[in-house]
Length: 411
Image 1: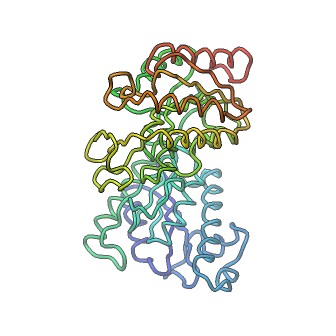
Image 2: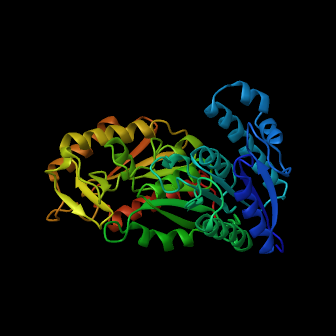
């Protein structure tokens, strides 16, 4: 690729100067631009390559319908649907190689839909006044989205704003030049885990999966990692998943901000992707470490993992609730599903003699999980700890069976 073309999208009626500044920087750095106007009421100072009328039409509507709705939220959703459809159309036609969207809260709402429409590996940047904000729900983030805080950018160009926008323009152009989208020459197994201090299975499984012709992508189950995992699983990006660290589901039902969204543990199942599941760290809820602990958890055993995350131990009844939540999510699966249930503990802190071990709570979870396991799920109860070799052997045995019978295509 000698001259990448970047889609530059935003409301050109109100942010004309800022968007054209981005376009100019991209061109000055050797890139090409396609401009897309997602305005509703006003018009840009000069025509864009894709007009607001083109965008509304791509969304199955018109600018007049957006205006006549009399509601800015409804109008922007019309434009968001059109912008997403148009971006994908342009990409499939080979006309763009990356995208950058500029906006405040309204523009960011639209930008999230546009970025989700583009495949993994296509550079997608959002320059926003609400980047990294809790206003943005995890389930709306594309797996490889990049966000840049638009400092000092609410209205008009200024030295601070120019600095942010220039770096963003250079970032998306550089990413388009360096991008390496997945080639698809080897099937990928998606796995969830935490670091080796608490879970070990990925270390033993990676070389075994490589021998069988698979690449392994391990997602850090701390909210954003699980979100990316779910999004890609739902798209069918994986030949099989080994979803062994489902704690984000626990976090969500316990009200933690460390969440991957309400649909955790459903992406692969709804897409019919074969899945092997284990509830590692089911007994813990991760909380934001720099915030005060909720009163309900104040007297619990805890582990401060770092200044960002503190893990709190669940009580017996909460563990039963967690088992029921797993069952409810897995019941939605349309593809082959196996749950591995290691009765010896499900993280390194959950062993006899370890600081967070609770034998009674573990037993309660295992009993409840067996009692509520849905009929579409094959459960294998293992007399082992999740970090034992017996666990990885059991996972490989399931995979090998599926390879033998064609459930999972061979790599």
